[in-house]
Length: 131
Length: 329
Image (cartoon, rainbow over all chains, first blue to last red; front, side, top):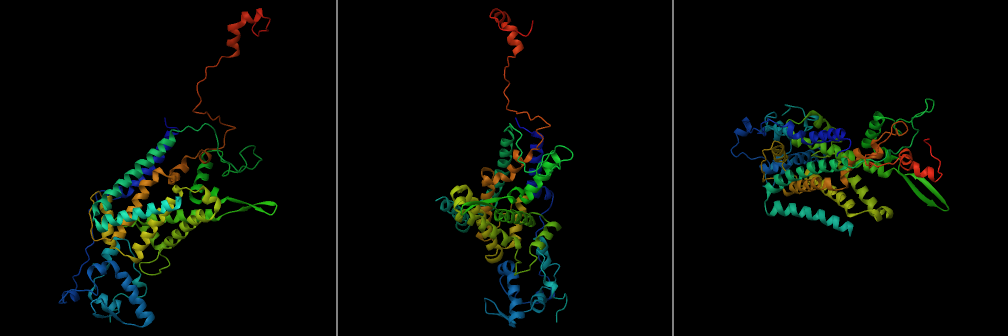
């Protein structure tokens, strides 16, 4: 015998609906895994397609590298980055990163939108200001 | 002992997840099997506990009140502290659940010299509120891994929480608040002698478990990073019932998930069930209307009564012979 059955079952119904809402929201949706595109003129012209770090490193740590670059360039005036291979790169978002990855929509935004991240690059940098 | 065993239990959980994925490579077990199992235990356990409580009768009308009951029209009625109907009960319940109103009235009694002093004690209220609200926001923020596209509400919440724009990935304000609140709640149990005396392993274990979850999450976001895209692929696979098994995510992720799974599985059998129990507290969910509405005790046993009229009808002759006055003559 359940006392106050109507209220208890109504409460449990709300609980279950809230609990399985992520499952319900995804019914009938195809897996849309992001596929960042490397198809830009600058990358296609490269002999060896290699970023400043390995793919795994860049996928995981690129935001921390960018933050480190910002601090080095703007706060310490160091404009040279040496990667784990000993190669040197000029620290610049627009002239190093975006020179190759000039397709923001098909590259940066695919993953950022997928995981719900809103980078604030463009609060300081101007789009298309490559010199 | 209670403290160390709880801490050791959480350390053991961390080690199990680390050995299971980092050494044994059981990614399917820790990424898919255990989360599904924990989810089922949580859902079914929660429902079981609520139904079990629903089977307990409420013998008396026992709302706790601390305000003027509804009476004559010229006496001011305190609608929230002494609800007279459903609306008042709902209002009081909402304030209780969202703002822990009764804890706000927490008092501390102290002997100062020869005098007994009563003072307001709000730290527990503040610590509890800070922890629960951070927990809610963190839980809602995690929806960004389970929904595609990410709803604007979740993005907005994320934006508010990372409003300070410190570091990259941007520091969440709730990450700081929840660690501070949990450490306060733990320190309270460890250093206030009276509270330490009444604290059990089942008080320490959830605190250590939550601290473990929060720590692993913070480590994963800011220090031992994992590939967030793979994490979302795993999470989306779980909620679309087409689980994928990624192998390129670090062990710290599986430690986090295993601790969260442990919390989910532990939840229905522990004091954490106050999340559901608050709704079923008779002192909170009843209106103080006992002067207008008769509260029937559902436990009342049907008693065979033998009224005086029946008694007299049975023994009338004998009573008359003995000279006992009778009513029906």
